[in-house]
Image 1: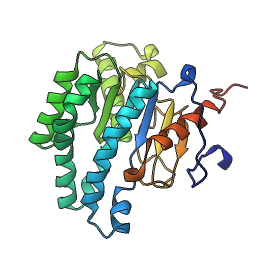
Image 2: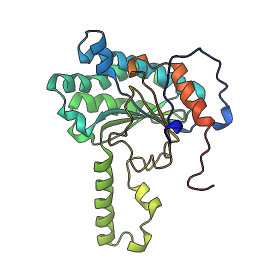
Image 3: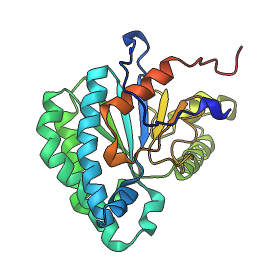
Length: 252
């Protein structure tokens, strides 16, 4: 099974032939390794987060140019509140800095910004920046840039089940109507297709409470490259490997 997991290693650069007919419609990325990138350079962790923000801008352009329809980025998890207060405060300022500087380009590139997660507990300045981007890009028809912000999959599934129980008790839906499709409609990604490809950087090989339901049949691609060092060639390699796998969904 391990041979199904692709790790990026230093090797001679070769031209990868990406087929346009099988570009993954939805790519999800766990952007990991900002702190490790900074530590190796004797810098504070926040410097790694700031550098990682620059990479987000580049990856959005790469994905859009390649024809990806949805790009979901794990920006801040429900567990990240456990980090030092200074780091959390910095991370909460990043969406505003990112969107304020990049929003004109997102509009020009026809990118639509969305968010999934519990934003009601986010700082006001973070909410305002996100809502402004959502409002100003709501009519765009190109790549959907979906930020997972204060998101945790177990919480998402628990909330969905609670809402389903409430609607059953209210008579809005019948017990016999409960199936996988119905559960999916109660999730935060109800308007999006499930990810075709999951990418995680920094060498960690786990999901970290990210889209546990939605990733059931996604292809996984792990790389030892830290997020601030992630480049277009890595995204292309991930898509190339994806295109050369057989997706059978439990069949033969």
